[in-house]
Image 1 (spheres, one colour):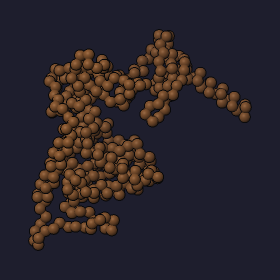
Image 2 (cartoon, helix red, strand yellow):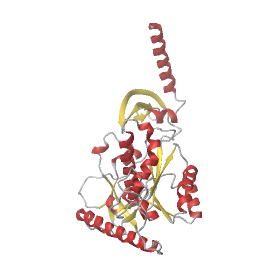
Image 3 (cartoon, helix red, strand yellow):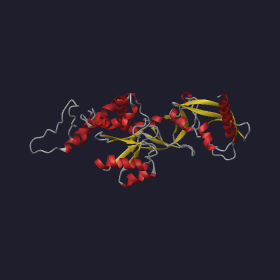
Image 4 (cartoon, one colour):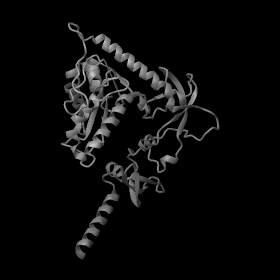
Length: 362
């Protein structure tokens, strides 16, 4: 399971929940409205997935707040479903849904590139296109893998409805069909693994060993605002390995105030070599604006900063304790944290004066 977000509003919807069966690759695309809660996602999951297919044995997802909520975990645990979360900073764990997300976006991009707010009308067609398309790993379409026959394409497709070829009196052998699919998937996985292993090296760590941790630039920005994230150090540490999770994940001894999940894929770790490369000695931490003893007393300067594809207003603020302390803070964060600070009265009066000047000129 995964979400496709950041879409323009279409009939009130602006997100898609993508659910893929790991065995047959059959997919469902469910539209959602922001802000959706765990209860709303659970209801959509029941209406669109559980109703036609039954309760799943296990669900693989990322660590979205919906999937990690107590309601979602208790609901699926009560149904006997095992929850499997992706490893931190390793989206390949949930690679099946990530790949289907790309296919969905590609289809919608081709269908509604000039009218993007019409994507909701094309979503059922996108789902039917994906489920009826030939998959090299299955040697058939997901539709046939699930139902045993190809989808009836009518006059749209290159082939017509083709029922299973069986002799008179014989029944469709689902066991043989399942065994064939499993053999095809295993053959495809071995082929993909062969090509992927060409550029890979064998790596392992021992419990107690010191390693360096790699965090992506956008993750660093979510933890602390850095003006030049691309030129910042890539690695943090060193940190001690506490435990080995499976064959490819490790639990690290992170600081107590860290807000990062402590289990990482081996691809995000590097052995510690003294004087090998510059690293951060500490993990980035979110600025603490919860103090009650300090108040902003003056705005010294303003600037516009680009953050992603958006522009953010920042203020150069002087604090009262100590009087020489000045920092750059986001306008929205500062206004929300100190709504009664005297700096806003001065700013509002200045804006009123400018408004009166404009009216007098008019």
